[in-house]
Length: 87
Length: 374
Image (tube, rainbow over all chains, first blue to last red):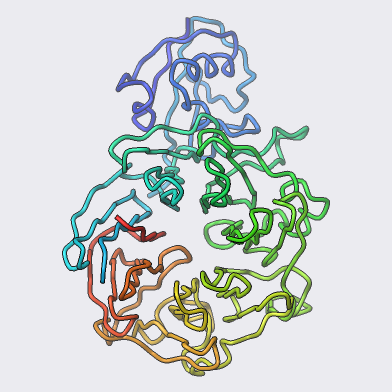
């Protein structure tokens, strides 16, 4: 299981939870698992071309992830943030 | 005879619903709904009188559609919001930035909705807005990239900003874009052809091209669906079908005001009457009320002449404007007109535009106002 940090922008989907767990061997698979449990969440973060939306950021551990096809070791934490993009 | 009216107000920071008494003198407020969301359009389904669809996104989160069947008391999210197909080259492919326009389908097609997006895309739902599919007749048209070049952008992104359905024929529709002007289909969206003859595009090498115009807003005259009104980036136009040549009726506007604006509102019972809200399109395009003195202008002779109506509106130092979807009429008698400003003010007139009064102030920037019977 991967621990996932949920930003405030998405807690409406997770019934207020800021930390959840999800299964999957890649970021995409984890997001798909999240979307099954919290319908609609993935599309708010990832566009229809599987790109991270411009004002969202994903980190695996300390490393910024740009490609959701990246593998997860399973013990890492996926962090989803609303990007600080001015204003 | 008047009747109670409901105003559906979409803003840059959420949605509000205002409900009037039968005289439209007192208004109650319901909101905010989805505070902090960018709400481009909030629309009631006239076929059932209770389903609301909302086009929303936030500064961070991607675009979606929310749906209510209880007047906004509760909302569910579309299971499959408008989205382009996944492309072979995803790095350079289209993704819906926001849904801009929501259009209930023809009266004969309950459950059908249409949506227009930025970048320009046409989408259709057959289940009341729960799931959406792209309309290939436009989105995959061989000339799509000529009509909607990548990188072309109004300040909030290039738009398929409007869909209009002929009440006599569900297969006959028009759409408006900010990059290629107006299009028409006779086969329910399978094929589209430009409809821009004699419409100026003064920012193009050929100022009267087949396409390339910026059609800010189009509307059918409700009592005469052969008459189209258009507020274009370059002026005010009228088209009487079957002609395909638009008439620049804005030339009759006062020269110091000009005929640039975002929107046009036809009278629901008189096909010769319409209102516009002019804005300053000179020099660097301030897009403010000309001279800081907001006014609507009305024609009652199909655009041969225009009269200024500014009773009750500020007479100095008022620099707001009214965006594409933020000026509308109800269908009550006497007619009610409503406009929402970029300064977050909601105004109404119940004497066909002569006098105006405020319903609300201090709202966020207003993007859309839709009036429906309550």
